Image (cartoon, rainbow, N blue to C red; front, side, top):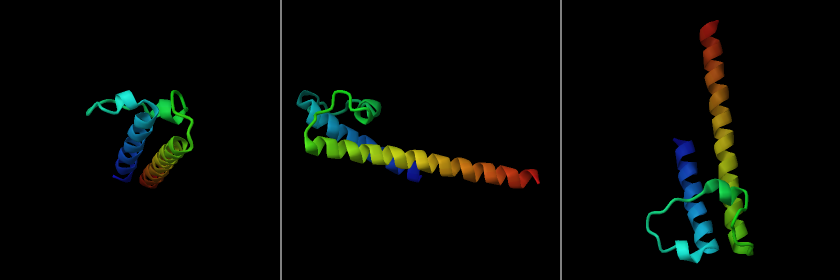
Length: 84
């Protein structure tokens, strides 16, 4: 559940980055955001506030990776316990 919550937060921040980078896209109510383009700084505005939002997206993506790694370790530990 935590992974989903952090992913939703990353998506919301990615929308904010894209809205600041391309104001023409901001008026679309339901559009798609490209998390990878934001993470790789492709087509993102270079101002300090937008880069701060991008850093928040990167932090959340790192948290998602860490949570998946913890889940994998937990799952492998449980599987190893069942084998013994």
